[in-house]
Image (cartoon, rainbow, N blue to C red; front, side, top):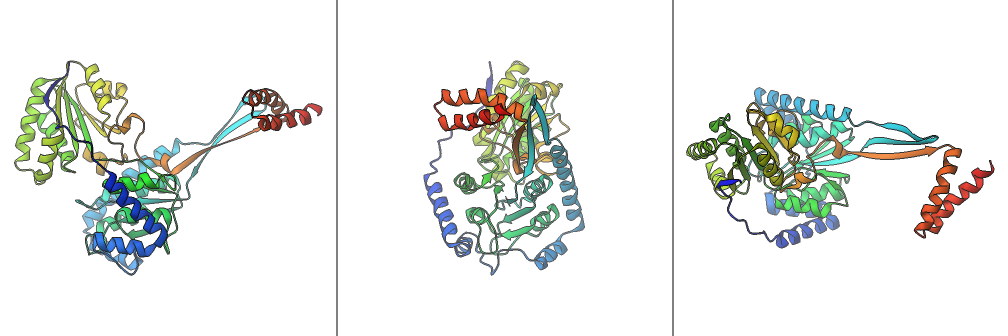
Length: 424
């Protein structure tokens, strides 16, 4: 039986009715008023109301000149890894056609959407990696028009490194707009900004609610909540490294969730002690300490099977496995956004540099969906054609199938083919 050395504090279900109302008002205002509403909300929330929210070539050039060479080189390195993995994914989404019955041909075509909108959050930290993940991926998928938007540094405009990341990633249009009003502008369109077909990207609860309400008018990626990490370890794990990885996610947000599932009581106890020790000097301890204190869990289990069952029930966004045999968990775990196998990889690699996409499911959504990929930006459409002989055979069965359901006009569409092709 699992033994809990630390449990998360019970969390009351948040009443989001006020958030829903605020988001609905903003979306309706932008839909009705266009840029005037965007400017009003941008002024209120971000102290930002420029003559034009679209970033100009001169602003792009100025931002690039402000970046240290090492920073630009590092951004380019990260983007290369993300582009390489997205290209490898895209190669495996293929058109095909099969003759499933004599004379019956069924096929699939993979077609990119025409346009997408990438929301790159600002908030507590500049999220350069979000620009990589949400701009490069649709471009590799073949999206011809990628719009990107990010909030201003309050009252000062766009963060130069974020702008460079958007440009280097291949964004076709860039806007300095934040929050719900930015999503509404991309989804509905404003003067000079045509609507997009899909909006993606992380954000706070207002951004998540905006995506929820916009879904249907546009496609979305997923509804992400605070970040999560679950680590499975055994007696071979290094408690110092496990603790550092847990705190690496705890610093995101006071509501971030962390879980350690250990097959060794001693490793679990040492990791908890290490977390307490590292928090003493952690630069972001004001956030990480609250997150770990309120939401951290430590569970000791008796077997790998028990660890798998608990992990799949938790369905974490990020799953790290630091055990002697991590392949067992790769073969048996099924509910996670992305798995980091062995001590040699860490969630931070996935967040920033290694190449997999960091837009991942949270709040147990990994039970039914994966993260952002090129597949989100393409439509898998089907087609069919048949010879007259095959059509005649199918029509006879299909007419009866339609009549079973009293779909009589459907049946007639089969009957007319029977009558025509049966004479030929």
